[in-house]
Amino acid sequence: MKLIINADDFGYSRGINFGILDAYQFGVVRSCSIMANMPAFDHAVQLAGDNPGLGIGVHLNLTCGKPLTDAGELTGPDGLFRRKDDLFPSIGEVPCEVIEAEWEAQIEKVKGSGVNPDHLDSHHHVHMLRPVLPTFLKLAGKYNLPVRLFGREYLPGEYKDIVSPDRFSGDFHGKGAAVDTILKLVDENKTGCLEIMCHPGYLDETILKESGYSMPRPHELHQLTSSDLITKLQEKEVQLVTFSQLDKG
Image 1 (cartoon, rainbow, N blue to C red):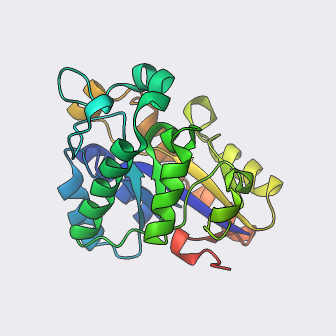
Image 2 (image 1 turned 45 degrees about the vertical axis):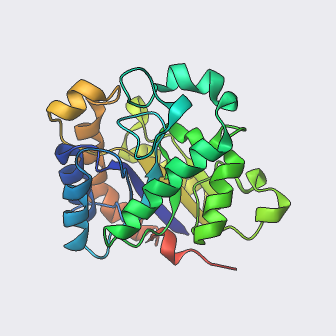
């Protein structure tokens, strides 16, 4: 089987960047997703340039930090993105054009930095909300990029040619962030391609102040660099791949 272990939040903070890099260099992560609007974006781009084997997607964002455009309904009085608990209940009231413009700006910033993105996903899975998914798929089609989906059944007919892993798991999270979780998922998904989401990182001031998911990140990194995990995945003949290695039909 093929396995994508994708680390979210590249560019969020320097501690996160260094954690993802260590998970790539010393562990099982081969793919990550970069946040174009976050403060450690330039640092992430620099690290990416030194590690060309690390697959990098765009972690499209509507819920954290400062937007790249005049995002209107997406922002609060402070000019920052509204938090997800505030935004999600009213996301259907935000014009699709506003979301599309912001996300296109994020994609173009990544491409303009010299990073060639290999997929699209999103922060807090906002792309999977029903009012947002069509805009997400439209951009995936425009840029000819694979995507993260909770299942192929989410693809309407006009987007059936968009590439994605066969299955997705968010089980490696919080108390579920363990070597045994990954091995169990591998045993349950012996064909096709599975994506497992993860959030490795080191703690720094930015992440402790801004993120609601901070303390588990070093633990995730420890699990993802476990020699036991590396050995057992090799024994099971699991191919660790990036989105660019998915079959394009």
